[in-house]
Structure formats: structure tokens, C-alpha cells
Length: 144
Image 1 (cartoon, helix red, strand yellow):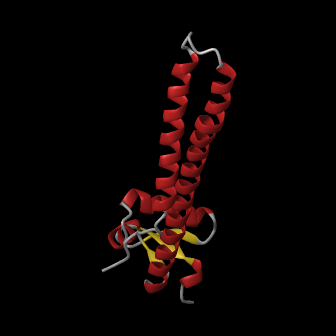
Image 2 (tube, rainbow, N blue to C red):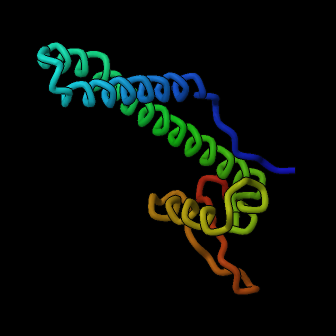
């Protein structure tokens, strides 16, 4: 009954990044509290330990998490583009935002925005049908 959006699993990267952020954050907070303890004379060792075992894993986890999220977004966008082009092919090059929304997990506003991008890039053109509805005509799929 149409395409449904899904992405490749990147749960492992998310789990590792969250663990790194948790451990790094926990170690950084506990080391910071020890830094302000007047009875502890070895502050340089604490700073070195906090940097190596706290700040580095925390920042590494944040960077990994951002990379995983960007990768998911790119994969979803790629999949969405393939879905829309497949729909255009099946419908002789003519789509509406409603038709895309009906056959994918996109809502009509998201579908319209993506279809508008195809127009901007020159892959499609907008036409108004006899009923006053907006149609997107994909140039590569139109029959002459």
C-alpha cells in the first residue's frame, strides 16, 4: 500500500555515544567536586585525569552522536528521494503533494517542500490541473 519510511539501524553508534557522554560527564562532575576540596593538594593530577577520562570521552560522545544523527538524516533523505522518484515513475511523471503524503510517511507539508526542491533544481515543473490542483511534472518521466 505505498512506501513507508525506514532507515538503517545506527543504534550501536547511539548507544556508544550515550555511554561515552554519561561516563565522561560523570567523571568530569566528580573530578570538579574534588578540585574544590581544600584537603586535596594534588590538583594538577585531578585536572589531567578530568581531561583524559572526563572531557575527552564527553566530547567524543557528543561528536559521535552528532555524526550518527547526521548519517541517519542523510540516509532518510536519500530513501525519501528514491520513494518520490519511484512514485513519479509509476504515475507517468505526475505527482501531487497529497499523493506523496498518502504513499509515504511524510505529511503533506513535508511532501510539498521536497517536491518544491525538485522544481528549484530543475527536475520538475509545477502545473495547475483542470480542478485547480497543483501538480509536479517530473521532466524525465513525462511521455512525449
